[in-house]
View 1 (cartoon, rainbow, N blue to C red):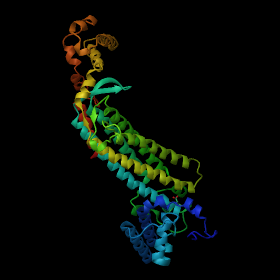
View 2 (view 1 turned 60 degrees about the vertical axis):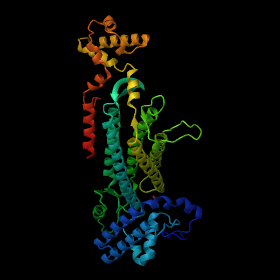
View 3 (view 1 turned 180 degrees about the vertical axis):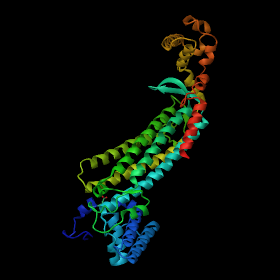
View 4 (view 1 turned 30 degrees about the vertical axis):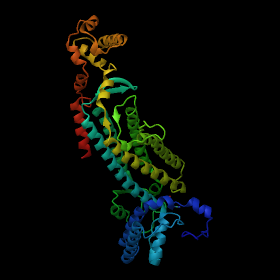
Length: 457
Ligand code: ARG
């Protein structure tokens, strides 16, 4: 069939060219945004007298009818159309006749597609932000529940100092809070309207771009028409925010996988979020966490794909830019799914405090506290550090921990030692005395929890 844009060419493209060129199979998901944008455009054309108010009314009613019919399933997408924009215009013209042909006055598919994508991604940004909030709430609830559960804190994956599980979880709440900020920041630049930039140069019609932007809930307009149709920064920014978010989920996943291994057994995942093995009856696998970790690579790939697509493009619109959608849609779908699964997985996860406590008791993770205690008795830190190291070496040689050594042994290294040292190196004391802001004491973690709750409210 000859194309709507047949003019200088006869519009009779080869079937293979149509298949290659067409984007309706993936851009049809923006039909709501396309139609809403067109309604705002028709209203503006009417308000400025570019078409009559009656024509604008007919266009808006016609577009509403198409929207309703697509929503209800009465109308199906025509996959032979080039894209969603052509499809809507085609149906409108079939239904309204010549009036339908007036909709595309003072606009181009170049500003139209940029608008649709911005509106679509703004909505998705909101959906994902809501899910991130759900996840932060789930993590914070767990942190509250385990705010005095002692576990080893690690550096280099070596036992380092005692912390609480609540403290560890709150680290993720803080990361997710930054993700939320990044999404909100990206939203500011997404909700800027390109409509009215037209093909690239603006238009000779007396349009009102701000009228359209206002109607669509966008707070500003793109200030340069070439930039308006060429800019995909908002999509790159979203992909970048999503990549960072996925990096956080992937690190969290990695820890959940480690913690639920037999080697650690710090946590138990609910049966609802684990799978079995087809051969090994004893297996309970953390597939959800592994998949989130795996899908992180896919979202990074989407970011790289879009950056690479855009890097050599001259201004203004180039068809290469049609490739933006599959990348960003894939990322949005992936992240939404990962977030939903993660909320449930965290909500139903339980800690095994005995195992955490046991691991915390085996790694000399109170050695810093031993040194700090000596500093409080008047020794310079470096000297105290050295003595603590010698005591740890002694323990290792004798198969003991610091708590087991009798006072007489301590006094071989320094006559500053008194019975009080045992209280200082008790893990509960080590945690309770880390009262610095952001630290692991119950009070410090409670302050972190309140902060996050305030930020969410
Ligand atoms: N399907 C196109 C896209 O996604 C719409 C814009 C087409 N514009 C054009 N001048 N061919 O980018």
